[in-house]
Length: 235
Image 1 (cartoon, rainbow, N blue to C red):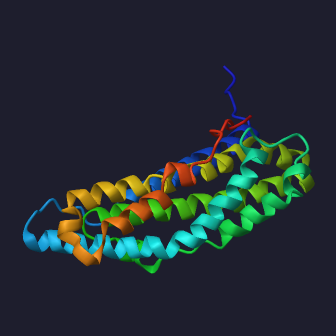
Image 2 (cartoon, rainbow, N blue to C red):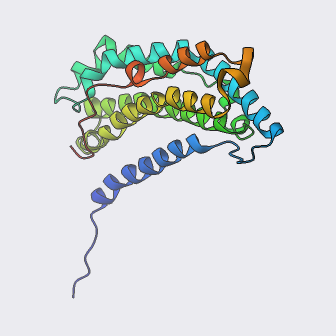
């Protein structure tokens, strides 16, 4: 009986999907980083409140660049939400595409939200750090790699162009997922603030007004992309 051989092209086409899937899973797993001790001793609660207040300050610091990236991405989103057009130059030559790519590249992680620092955050602050880190990773890499795919489509070999076209939806979905993640931060912050005692427990360290403002900044109304991403790998 003749042995069946696998097409090299098919193997190659599946690899990015596997790699990207793992990357996305790791990125979302970052949202669970940080100390999640269930201890409710006065000392433990005090530490969690201090860390939540620090995380809130970091979110306030990062709000400006994030808002600019969201605005730029929303302007460019209609170009790619339904997949790349047959003539990709209508995307790559668009001012909105360039501005979104640049805004995403300019995103910077607050020092407190870096992977090493976030591990030491107690309670819900670690989750907030992970969510923001996932957003930065998914959005910045999504725009950068989508641009690389378009370059391959426009100037690469036929095989490279086909490969890039089939896998471009990975990076479009990454951009969408990054903003979906960003939009979850506000509700998580509100829930954590209430769980840790609210305005009475935090006092001037973190006021209800400050939390409400951040919850609006990092919300579905402010950050979700619409319409929903409508592309699949290989389309």
